[in-house]
Image (cartoon, rainbow, N blue to C red; front, side):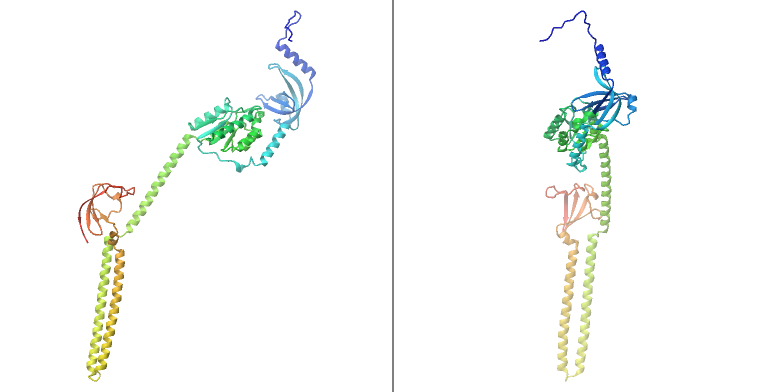
Length: 470
């Protein structure tokens, strides 16, 4: 049962300032000289040099302030996780009505419980290989879809989107919102990563938050978040927003960025710079192609200069055959003359030998004649075989044999042979020579840069007349 509000004439109400003043005075009288043991769970230094911190233990916490003159006398640099003993007095910060400890001396005792737990977790995860350099995956050069895990209302999301639009407008961004500070932050960050994994279209993911005090890193030192990042299928960029403090997420991520802006710069190139690189590469490729074509054209010209004209080669081959025939004819005539001389000598010997030796001489003459006939036939047979072999080689080397397989020679009006379609002009008249016969053709079109399938392309040469030659 609530008591009714009753105001008596003797009782005057206190103003808030008076109430805070009374409480502050009581605290200062009762707690004017204290020694307090606790762990620094938050610490910040203002531009004025004053230090603001929170001392905590397992059951409670209290705000504290260390003025600049007292902070300069400290023999060490306080930081989050330090366990310290503070000498000071209790008071009230009137503007906010907040009780706080005014510290004028401080000394370290050892690492705090929170820091010891964090160090133990770091060692355990490192022993599992989660922070190993060989696990780090390279970021995609030009991702099409970027996943972002951060607060929907935080400055980090604005910085990331602004940087992405500035560097490469049009890239697709998928936001998986999560609170990044507080007791529920680790669970929400892990859930957001699960949503992106189920979505499955991200090429890279940015996880992080904007700047803040060191104690705001707690969610990014949580084991659940660390293991979720380590197990993610695509590269992850950690952008916690602390240049000095390194979180466990920074260690396990594939890439660490000091700020969300730096994370966005790391995942996409500058569009203008990329276009400039492509233009440079295209120019270099074109120049290389032109140099290659020029080199190949020079080689073709050099080889073409060494090729012999078929008509000239045929004329030289015919001349060689004529020389061989004349040599054979002279050799045969020489052998016949020698045989005739031998026969005449034997005849004279026969006549001189007389009748008594006529039978023996006749037999010798007959034997010599038989041997002479066999020798001449053998010699002529060998020469005929050699002539046939030379004729076969000549046929094999003859351009007419090539023409017999379906090829033809094309010559311009000045008699020069056509070796490339680039030499021709549409409407120009050509002289064609086949294995059997000749023809005159007119160029209807030319295609120097591609191979034309004659079975599918209408005839490109118009034959006007022919003059068969065998």
